Image 1: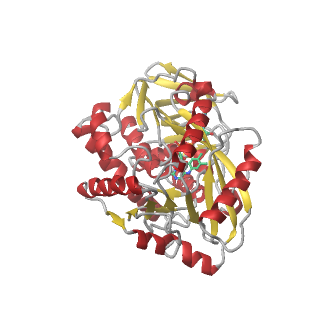
Image 2: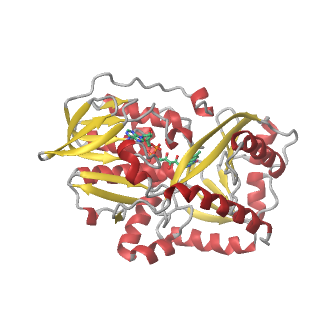
Length: 422
Ligand SMILES: Cc1cc2nc3c(=O)[nH]c(=O)nc-3n(C[C@H](O)[C@H](O)[C@H](O)COP(=O)(O)OP(=O)(O)OC[C@H]3O[C@@H](n4cnc5c(N)ncnc54)[C@H](O)[C@@H]3O)c2cc1C
């Protein structure tokens, strides 16, 4: 699918033609999670091969909007501790809180050209109740030593040009990237360190082979691996099926407009901060390196959504930001995000040395930088009890194929609720 990112990417990856006979670790899924895990394992001296069913970037990692946000979309520090207990909760909070730094550190260490800007992430409060919620949330993150503050309505107006907000949470470690260039940069780093990357290799089965595992691709190719990592997110093809069905797939539409003029940029994004507000039907925007506005949304009714969403997201941008000339989408694209039922990431153990991880819940860039590292630690033999992401028994959700209908109903309800916010 053509996206803003495929049009503007500067990094290119060439798939390795020869699949090795055997590796220490086989990674299934070449998105951020798989590539980060592979990078970590190679740095630790393991041999690694990464397999993707499509091209690198075919999944959510190539389709996302490039907002780097080191927190949870639907949870805060108190609810995480309530669910996991203080010790495990704090371990997960520290991990997630360091997610954006992990992304920007990797970019710097590997010299990845991907328009990375750690400008901070702005989370404006819509309605009085959100002010209290965000002030409390900012304080909780500060208690964990993170640079999270709350700014006044006046300051948020100066940052967005919008006067509907009552203040905003500012997470100083957030920012933006060109996601496809970041992903391809990670893949190039894997290859540079001696790992191999194989496109168009859907893994259909992973079977025990003595003390090792044998992976079989749809192409008929096979490989033997001591350890296997499943990093296939919301996908349900081949061996990804069970894990993919343990999460709710959410179809998200993104648009990029024609470039905004200098006066508009100065008014709506003077410091280049990505914005995502607190509405249930949330409003987001950021600029790319050419000052195109990037925003997104979801469709309550899937039929004809691609055309409709492109237009409606552009209209929303024009109205909310008071743009002097209505903008139109230059490119529209769509991808599928994975939401877990408790909105937290999770690890699965499918056998001895056979692990999976999922659940970035809309905060995938920062979260995958950590999920990939944690999966690498599992493959290097660390006990699951010691890892900072909770382990669950892998159970596909009942009625998984109907979950998009529930998501559509939730979206309609969210739009209605926003109308009553004061
Ligand atoms: C439209 C959209 C916008 C988003 N915007 C943001 C954002 O701005 N900020 C943010 O933080 N998060 C965002 N997200 C979420 C984020 O992109 C994801 O959480 C993240 O990319 C997940 O990475 P991943 O590596 O786990 O999965 P993916 O990138 O989905 O990779 C999984 C890979 O597995 C491969 N695969 C599947 N089955 C098999 C198989 N059997 N064999 C081999 N390979 C297989 C697929 O081809 C795919 O490439 C967005 C998501 C979407 C869809």
